[in-house]
Image (cartoon, rainbow, N blue to C red; front, side, top):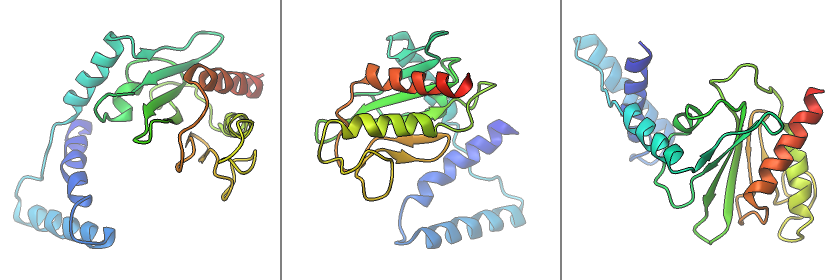
Length: 193
């Protein structure tokens, strides 16, 4: 059932990203088409993309671009710089660290980060806000364009939710990948003591 559900999701997501102009119109069109297929007893759309995503993630891991965390720093580093787009779940499946930092190159030459909890690992932290605050303070220490040390709207700094967050949207982070991993690991150790 999971494979079928995943295949349905992978088949309809590209449709939700295309024309017509609004998300609600795209969603409505897809729902109506799915309802008609169900009523007619026709097979639902299916795209078995997951094996391809896993293969891409495994290639990254074999190439040393997914670095697992350690007992002292249970944070994996996923280096996506120059790689083709990949499903984050496929990269999480390549390591057992409860946290991961993904880094990729921005079009303007800077670095972009996503920090998140690994959904395949238990236990995992439920609140990464200490790490988010530590990274925002470190980014602000580099000066403008960061406008404040807190991850708050208007500060042009890091932001996000309790279990996933990222670097500033409007410019590349000035933090190095190993520094981000270290700060996330330190913040997670401080909250689990």
